[in-house]
Every structure is written in structure tokens, then in C-alpha cells.
Length: 324
Image 1 (cartoon, rainbow, N blue to C red):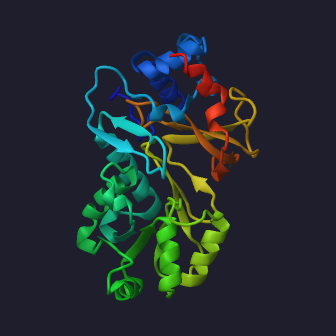
Image 2 (tube, rainbow, N blue to C red):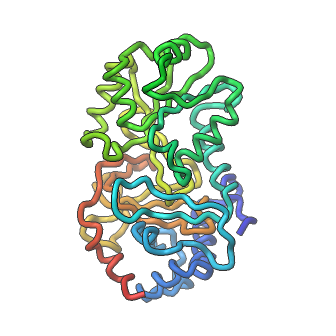
């Protein structure tokens, strides 16, 4: 499958997706079993919209990896309780290519960027896909002053003020609860920084809406907009929102929704539904994942995340797989 130019433009997205689907339907035992339970013959799938999506909950209970491959690395979700998802990678370089190419598409060359990471908890989790991405990006920009920050460090305010005065493009990446803590403890003018929140309170604070979070951060840091990153350990690609919570995916990742009450309903536009993602970079795992997020997809391919499902254990897709 390495012959597919995943990140290039040499083939149409649908052509690549169908080729990867046929490969994973044959080589991935979990996906193969899921299709069998649905009584779907992969040879009959000729259109992108007919590809079945694997419920993301199966990453908690199954090793979702193509046969005869050695595990290069395992990512684990950062859940606050219960069983965590595990993503077994056969080729970590695919993940690195995905996040580096996409990051530079969004923000410019890494040679001209400084990255500041405010990521408590993640730094203690060696299996975090977010931390792996940040470590790699920061290592490549270390000469520009990239570093991790801590709310406990004595010179934190000085470091941030110096970054705000720098001529170098500086990006502050932080988990939501840490950015709120910073906003409450050290409000200051950071209008020259790009601030990206990676979502989630991780049990540290009460969950609030993205609008409320961004409003608080904009006020505290004199920002016109707060950016967001959307990713998860089961994916190898991320989407970024530059404003108003509207995300845009890289060319090798596409987002869809299906009706709330119909696990196999047709993909819908501009209606709230369950988010389904095609991530071509997930070539040796599963590229077709139904998440537990609610969202809305627009005609130009952009999307927003509106919340989480609260009945995930009862969805038809998961129940159909319990017999395997």
C-alpha cells in the first residue's frame, strides 16, 4: 500500500479511499469481521458513500491493525476513566508526515516558527499522540526557542511577554484547562501570539462550551481569535479551526455525518449528526472511523463539533459486533 501517494495530489481522494478500503477489508481482521457481521461483500463497494465506518469504541477492545505487521508504537487516549482506546501503529513515519505537512500548510515553514507548549498531564503520558506530535514539532523548532511551559515556573510571565514582542511567529498550544488557568492567573497582552487550544478539560475543570472558552481567552490575552485543533489517538491526522470553531481538514482527511437515529443512514450536509471520518494516513489501521462526536458538515467540506453522544454503548453498530 505504500505505492499510494497519500499526501499528494496524484490521485483523486475517492480513488485512494476505495483502494485503501479494499486493502483494509482484506488485511485488517477487526474491520473484516465487522463487515462480515454486516453481511457486506467488500467487492460490492464501488462508491465512497457506501463504505462502512468502524465504530471508534472498538479501539478500546480490539487491536485494530492489519495482519502480519509489527507494532512500531502504541498511542493511548487520555480518557479520565474507564477503558482507554489504543491505536497500534505499524509505521510512525506516516503520522509524522501527516502532522508536519498539515502544520506547515496551516502555519508556514517550521524554520520560521517558535512553539510554546502548555500541556500539563500530557507530559506524563508517554503514549499520548498529542505529546508525540508536539515533541516532534518542538524538536524541529528548538533553535527558534520552542519549549514547554509550566504554570508553576517563576519566569512564565516574562517568557510569554518576550514571545509576544518577538518578530518570530510564535504559537502557544495548550489544553483548555491549562489555558483557562493561565488566563485567570496571568492575564496579559498576547495579541501577537497565535493561541491554539486542543480541547477537553480532562477532568480538571467543569466542561464549558467552546464559545465560552474562547471568549474568556480572548478577553484575558487581547486576542481577536482563538484557534482550535481537532484530533484523537485513533487518527493520524488533525483538523484546525482558525476562527469560530469551524474546522478544515487536510486533503487526505474528510469528515461526514450520518443521522442520529440511523447508524447506516446517508451522509448529510448542514444537519447535526454523528461524525464519521476518513483518514487516509491510517492506512495500516482503519481509515474509516465513526466517532462518538456530534457535528455538522458544510458544503465546502468544513465542519464543526457540537458535543458528544451520550448513548454510545447502545448504538447498533457496536451491538452488532459483540458476537465476534
